[in-house]
Length: 212
Image (cartoon, rainbow, N blue to C red; front, side, top):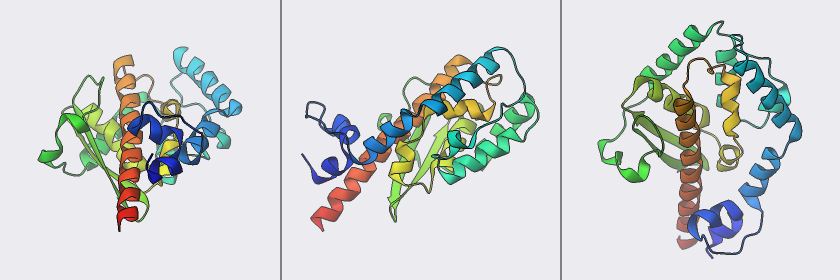
């Protein structure tokens, strides 16, 4: 098993060596410990109930729910929570879409395409100074806004921070009335692919260091 896999632990092994025995360590241990936090889970379940009940106001968020998120993602959550109604939050998503940087044509390949999305979405990471930076694009303005939200919120974070992000954080944005179930599922798939590609980019960078 490669040195990068040993440092990253189970998550990296599952990507590069599906049949290898695993131990929990590194980024994976951090991510699993974050996912196991009962108070955060309970809080998010309560917020889901509020959304299903038709509440239009963004629910209050306990600090413990967002402490582990990357700094830029926290700022985005705070900005969405200050917007008073679903239509305004929807317009804010479209504003994010307009800010997305140009995506290289040569990167529009299946390897970078998000599976299970209603629209076509592509994401590509790079690692610079031990931080991860993303570019993304979509053929739909709404999906482009969701991709831009993740690109802005995750770029500049460390691999460990990105791996610790729970998909449930979408509940904190108050977009429940703006997104269909299929759009929400596509958003979750975007995050999962970005986390997978973060692992792959991290391992490639570590392998390059070992060869240098």
